[in-house]
Length: 122
Image 1 (cartoon, one colour):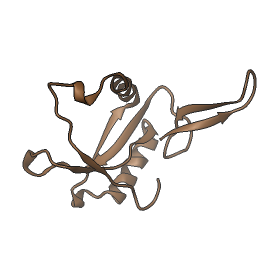
Image 2 (tube, rainbow, N blue to C red; image 1 turned 135 degrees about the vertical axis):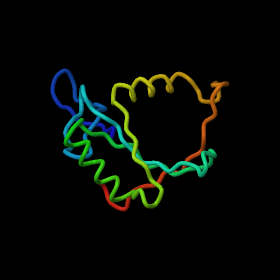
Image 3 (cartoon, rainbow, N blue to C red; image 1 turned 45 degrees about the horizontal axis):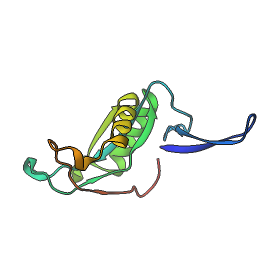
Image 4 (spheres, helix red, strand yellow; image 1 turned 180 degrees about the vertical axis):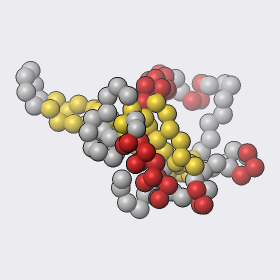
């Protein structure tokens, strides 16, 4: 997840935003992924769908462990699918959306979703 990490020392104490791996709880820098699960509308029809919070992991072992956790908490049998994106691509898209409102996108249509929190944390 994105978290603030306290830092002390010169020139001053800071709270630093960082990507923290939801599997090992260490900072993710460089190579990493964001992952989440979602349900899609039936028969390809866009409809309000469910989505999990977005989780962060190191590529490899941590990412695979998080995928297992997502499947246990959001089973495919209940219509969930897991998705992921490279952290670099995610941050580029996030920076773009910070400066560009969905309402100004005349070519696209943004769909409502309902955030579904897990029963337990990873």
